[in-house]
Image (cartoon, rainbow, N blue to C red; front, side, top):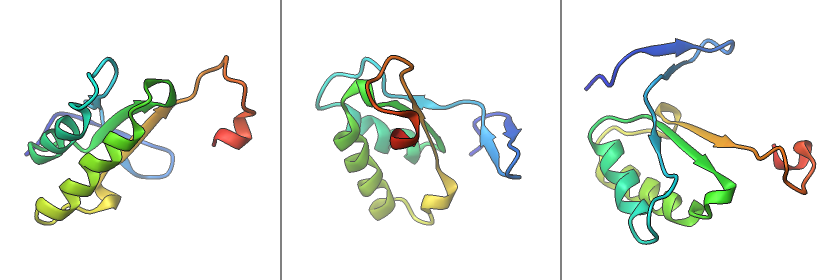
Length: 94
């Protein structure tokens, strides 16, 4: 399934323009949302540490890798926003 256009990165990889975001998702819904998004063809996930839902994202990914035939980690782009006001140094976060 195609979910739209892709953008060519400097690395040569092509990232889908359309991503599945986890911002303002209710606790308990994120894992299922990530799984369902991957099941219907999303390959770009948009996250941020401040959302506090990393564990649920991981649970959704784990389920997807177990249940979606042919899905590989290298097919998925995980984009994480880094807050410019965070207390950690950028190199520590990256």
